[in-house]
Amino acid sequence: MMTATFNVRIGINPISWCNDDLPSLGGETPLETILREGSEIGYQGFELGNKFPRDPAALRAVLAPYGVACVSGWYSGRLAERSAEEEIAAVEEHLTLLVENDCQVMVYGEVGGSIQGQIDTPLFKRPTFTSEAAWQQYAERLTVFARHLAARGIKLAYHHHMGAFVESPADVDKLMALTGEEVGLLFDTGHMAFAGGDPLAELEKHIARVVHVHCKDVRGEVLRRARNGSWSFLQSVLNGAFTVPGDGDIPFGPIIERLARHGYQGWLVVEAEQDPTIAPSYEYAQKGFQTLQSLVARASR
Picture (cartoon, one colour):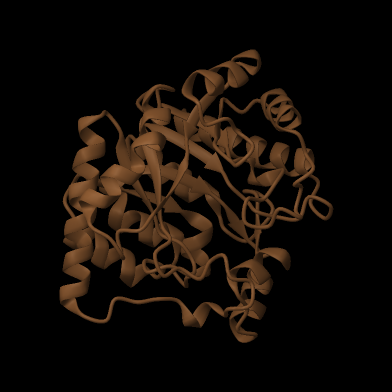
């Protein structure tokens, strides 16, 4: 039996309607449609995408009519290439946007050296840190940067991601071991499965550091084809590697139950990049919401 300490909210990333990396996927869909449909389904908040205004007051004004919160927003960090001081200067506008919209976390995605946006580059060509010194330097920069965010009331949520420096379970293990407690983990079920990890087992290892959760399902057969065919990340997306919770091969029940037992308090965000002409946005967003809503209710009893 769970207790009332499982205080979570269910949000969604607009990637279900339109894809920032592949504008041909839903690029014509207006922001108003995204907000209206998401709020109708029952989502309590949205992560940011490229259609959202970047002025804090304008963002509040866009969200207010739909009664939804700003969950967080992806930040393209480059600490693999530049100093913490340079990153602190670069992040200010984005950080202010999140602070003034009452966000608690920032999604940090490392794009320095990343191949995630290169449709013709296979995933096996992703960047890696080639020495202990390189890992240590990166971890130190990240910890300093996270301390800066914390001073503004924002927790860094590090997004392990296919095609980037921190992709595999071993990479996540290393990063968590080398960074300070200021560096929180964004646990992404889909990316963890794609990288060859068991999402539940990996969650168990790092649950004390998890500050944000992306609920992404996978289609196992597509992942096998992606690995065997040396696909790029974007080729994998186009071929349907990801889907919403309840539509793929990841058992989400034990994951939600484990978060509940831990007393996780934060957002569960549906994030499943797909082609909306093949996976209609409203239908799949609704499926993801209903799956998580049911599992949260069960875990809260």
